[in-house]
Image 1 (tube, rainbow over the protein chains, first blue to last red):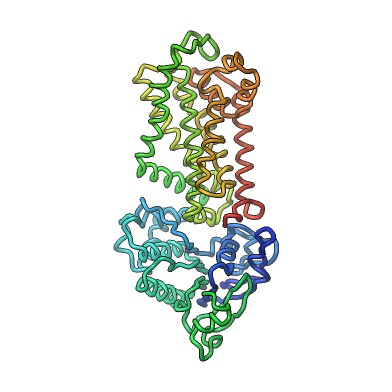
Image 2: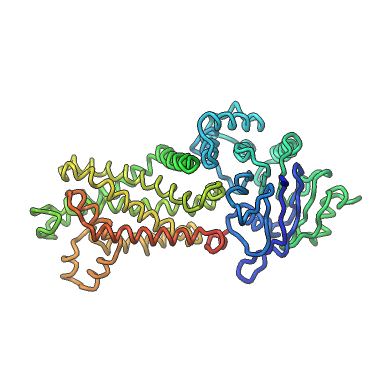
Length: 240
Length: 263
């Protein structure tokens, strides 16, 4: 059974407006895939469907081999998500935030504590576990959310514009970190972004525009001699 | 089963922690019924004459009459406030976090409801304690008997808030909820005046009050506080609660619900 992420012929409309049109891609286990698209391309709709916030009757989604529509709980259990909007409880400490999340995934007591320690170590924020989330800067809040998404040892990690609102240094650091996680732990990562500098040449690149997949392949192969920015602008008609 | 209970404990605990961190909100929520009790009721005491109606066995003061209604008010406002927090939560994403947990969505929503109801009940008892010190006493055992009534009423009103939260498009619309849900529900009920008194001025208004689920929640609490049994109010509260919960589940259903409109 594959530990990757597969989307088959996914179509979704808001009323008469088609937000996603026959979207398909298959990300192999352990790959970092960048979902690149301008604002309004349909990335958030795709994330809504991938996280089962809402469903579509057209198309299928498989998370680590589990079909989301048929086995939603098994599929969600294999998935870690970092949402675009901030989802920490700012009045709680980092550890309390993670403990809450672990419990939602059925982890408690010593097991949860061990997992939380290890997730915080991975993201380099273990020494700040007792601090309230409100006291953290944007970059550290994001790290906390990534650590939280890893507490239940998911096989697939989804990040929806995870660097939004961060300064250049924090953005770079988070992007590097997630690439590293993918390499070190064999995580399958889907990284949605509209910023070309967050995509590495070795990444799998899926370009989404106006609800459709425009390109899908190894980033270096797709862009050829152009910079990724030029390639992306040319593909999407200059709408970064 | 263990997973379900672990999640329940965590969600209730999170509500409790939020409550500890938002003491201002707790105090603000207490001020409202206390103002009604100590100012409004004092002013109205002379204006309204109350006769002996069940569950009371003697003439009572107006302050005594409105205490159960004000308990209901705490539950009503908190139920709606939690709906506000759900709309807000969803916008900031923590509702999304809750909904992606690998558990049935109905269970997750019920846990959330139970958490907010538990906090509301704590506020009701604080209010009752303060009322006690101002000389408004209930039956001693009534305070215990009221607990299940408060629980049911709180869940019913919370479910209404939950249902509304899945249909409200924007945070700003809470003002609309206030005007179109909270105030009519509160004023068109037996919280402030007994129904027979209402009938004197308008039979139509009395009939509206009689079908308002909030009236029945208030009566359930009122009777329980005096160790009396009110099966009719219980039935209404339970049925209304079940309908609101079904609506909430429909609203949050990933396939049919309204949630996708707001994405």
